[in-house]
Image (cartoon, rainbow, N blue to C red):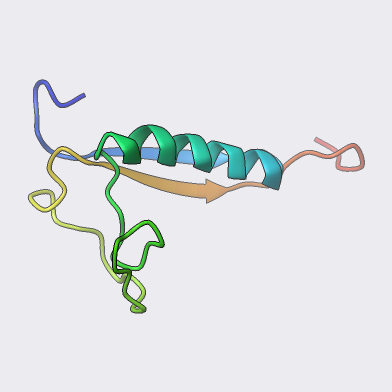
Amino acid sequence: GFKTSPYPIILSLENHCSPPFQQKMAQYLKKILHSKGLLWLPPDSSLQPNPTTEPITALPSPEEAKYKVIVKGKVGRFATKNTPE
């Protein structure tokens, strides 16, 4: 993804999975992207060595996020047996 540009890749997910599957997907993303140093982490992330208590108010600049993947997510309603589609 960074062969033509060093600027960040924004991975935008709309998730319609149940909470257990959402957790599994998050585990996979962390395992794959974080282990390779590709995942941009906000300062308050529990994955940071020294997380801050201040919530993030803005995304990093493109310069600050070079060679990183920013995951942006929206949790949608997931289907259950009792929920009409």
